[in-house]
View 1: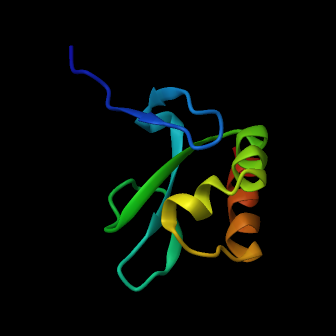
View 2 (view 1 turned 90 degrees about the vertical axis):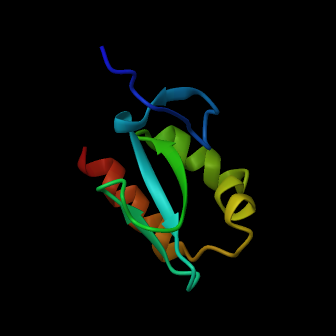
View 3 (view 1 turned 60 degrees about the horizontal axis):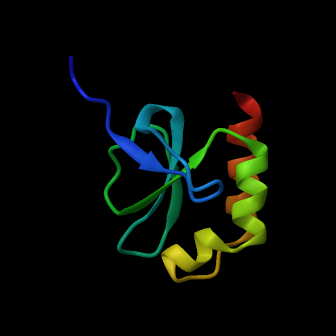
Length: 86
């Protein structure tokens, strides 16, 4: 049986299967996007598919600290839309 890669959610800090998390990517041009394929190039972080984890990550500014950059409200709204869709 093949091992499933584990990643840590930036919101709740729990390890979960990679396929169960949403990946956020910052590329070399400092553009941020939501990576639905898990294969985009760049620095990636993972967050649970949970509104609660997202709001906790926003409140504690974990995403901004990890990427070492300011994050626009547009990116957060995109994330909220992806999480609400599932």
